[in-house]
Length: 515
Image 1 (tube, helix red, strand yellow):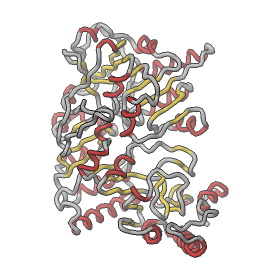
Image 2 (spheres, one colour; image 1 turned 90 degrees about the horizontal axis):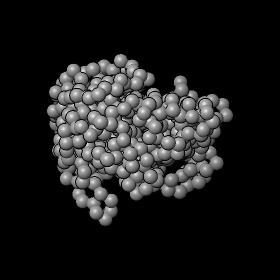
Image 3 (cartoon, rainbow, N blue to C red; image 1 turned 45 degrees about the vertical axis):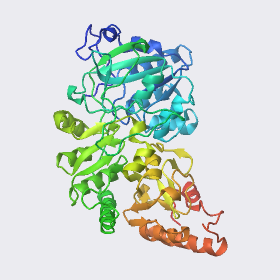
Image 4 (cartoon, rainbow, N blue to C red; image 1 turned 180 degrees about the vertical axis):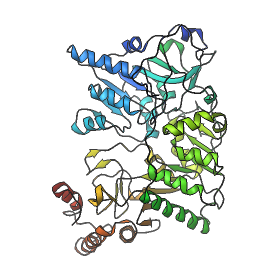
């Protein structure tokens, strides 16, 4: 059912709310948003399409629209886990309701506002969000709006289909609005592992997680009941994550990745049976890699990532993956139905954690994660741009890719070699925006091939990247650039500063990077 614009009926007592103090605070979404005022900093639940508040957000957008119609300037600062359901971003952006946004987004209306300067956007590593909020970088958190699936008799909160930054929001917010969503299966209770041992320096202690399956926390979230000003009941399913089947290019990229895994096994750098824990970004290429793993020789795999996609459910169901850890579910409509229908089975093979744990650099390094993330473009020396189109226009954000790339055992970036029908090359002389430096990039993969950059100096890297990853239409121009840069400029990393961004300039002027 697609019911995000429908507000739930208020009932006198919910079978998901087992604590009388919370039952006494049940109100409509329209009443709940009265606690949110112009200029407030509002932190909401949600990571990807999962666990976003579904009733309060449209009610807030309507309140802002009504205020603007009456001549009142009404904006909020919006903090989330990562991106949230597209409806949430769109509804608030359409009424110009967001002044500042952090830390990640993926919706076209919000993106246009960011790139036009109408919305301030802070793009930061997801593992840094909780710490920076605790340190007060974003000021006072006025209201947290958190979706949960239930409230226990002792007043603890059963998380929904994502955790994200909910632990932090509940800890730091002055006021809390809870959405209790009875659509989330009761059997989800127990799939979560909420760790309460993090701290700011100098009081940090090691996080004792040494295996993907380890549980180090508790299955519920805590909240001070005195903070909770409103409880809204809903019965609305998560938005589906859009996903098209892998195309030929995605499958070819996946094939190169899988061949590389076998090469690493042959060299003794990966265990032959279960490899090492896998992390992958969201998208068709990542799903193609997962599908390829299902047909390969490896069984009993583990995954330590941010999100669980449909492909991961398939691998778990068929025994290829024995355990997966994430902070959120990023499923299509079919994937949601599969999870709900077999939740008792999946609960034994999946754990959802706060994102400060799912993305924690210490844990990523300890577990030896194989990090596979997408990119917009890479340059001939291995610097990667994953966020800014033509160096200036924000696409989505860095998300958690940096958390895994910098700290993983293997750091891989994947992309088709061209975009927009071949008019854009994903391999360029110099990226106009750097999210991941050459020091964090070990392997680049396109459908043309795979460039293993480990142990290579910049001059050697350039030739491997061009020969293995660039589209044939661009190889000659790239080789010619490198030859002239070495001859005319020299240096450890040769560049012609007047031409380094010539591919991008040519696209801006002509609509194509092609010479």
